[in-house]
Amino acid sequence: MKPAPVIPNARKNLRVAAIAGSVAVAMVGLAYASVPLYSMFCKATGFGGTTQRADAAPETASDKFIAIRFDANTAGSLGWNFHPVQSVMKVKIGEQNMAHYSAANITDKVLTGTAIFNVSPAEAGAYFDKIQCFCFTKQTLKAGERVDLPVVFFVDPAILDDPDSKSISEITLSYTFFPVDKPDAVSAVEQQLPKQNTN
Image 1 (cartoon, rainbow, N blue to C red):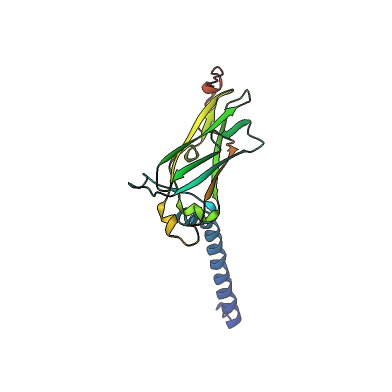
Image 2: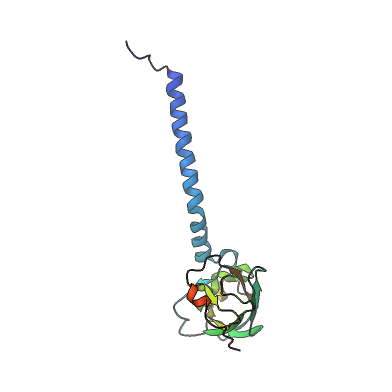
């Protein structure tokens, strides 16, 4: 007995189903890729106040100055006291500088946090470069421990050539610490260590 012939409408339906399935798979793939692609875009362009990373400051600095204001925030679920040591610095554009933040674990538990950051105005993000920063890694504090958290940075002199950014006189660098639910670096042994307070 011969199989029933495939009628044209059935072929058309199969083609449409195959195309729809391919589009669905592509959309799922794009959704997964969009977060890292967006992150790469922000890092490359400074979009949304995303700062840049650099190995070193330029060899020569401008004679122009810019004010850097420092801001600190902590998620309510992280039992830390986190604040900038200095509120404002006036720095030469292109010169390497170091600012300090302070964090203290005010609970009786070992806690790990991670900091997210941005600068405002957002246009300055493409020109604010960090060489070293506590925000590059997770931070683990024992119960009662206080630490100094430095950030080494410079403002790229190219900001002076950008018509949208050259009139900026002040940049705010802002950090917010959030808890890390399952810190890799915290072991049961560390949690048994005595409290340490380095004021």
